Image 1 (tube, helix red, strand yellow):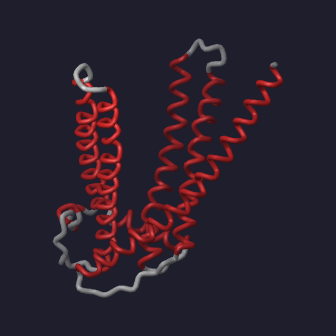
Image 2 (image 1 turned 90 degrees about the vertical axis):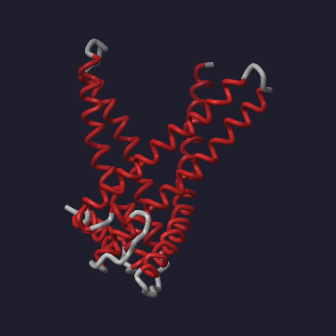
Image 3 (image 1 turned 30 degrees about the vertical axis):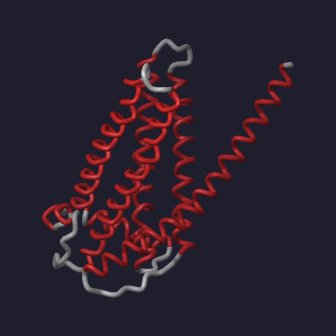
Length: 246
C-alpha cells in the first residue's frame, strides 16, 4: 500500500511538472505575440503624437527570448523560496527558535526577490527598444537599464500612480464582490454565485487596461529621451515631465 501511494505521488509530481512546463511555454508564446502587438500600437501612437512616422520592427524572436527569461526568473524565484526555507530550517532544526527561522528565511528570500525583481523590471522595459529600434536581446536590456538610470524619477512617479489606482480598484471591486452576500437570505444562491463570478473578468479587464496605460507611460518616457522638448500633453504627462527626473 505504501509503495502504491508513493508511486501515485511520484506520478502526480511528474504530471504537475509537465503541465507547469507546458503552460510556461504557452505563456511565453502568447505573451510574446500580445506584447509585440500591443507595444507596436503604442509606439505608433506615441510617434504620431510627435508628428512622426515610424516603422516598428516585429523582432518576435527577441521579445520571445525576453519572455522566456521572465518565466525562468519566476522558476528561480520559486526555487529561491524553497532554498531559503531549507537554509532557515538549519538554524531551527528542532523548531525551538521560530523567530530565528523567520528572520533568516525572510532575509534570504527578500534579497532574492529584490534581485529577481530588478532583472524582471529590465526585461519588462526591453521590448520597447527591441520593437522601436530593432535592438537585439543584450542591447535591448542595456537600453532598458539606461532608461531606468536616466529617467528614474519619472518611472517611479508613474509606478506609484499606477499602484494607487490598482489599490483603489481592488478595494472597489472587493466591495462589489462582497455586496451580494448581504442578500444571501432573499436571493437564490446561484444568483449570488453568478454575481460574484462576474466580478472576476471585470477586475481582470480593468487591471489589464491599467497595465496598458502604464506601459504607454513607459513608452512616452522613452520617447522623451529622443524628443527633449515636451510637446506631448497626454493623460500621464504630469508624471513624465523632466522635473520628475533624478
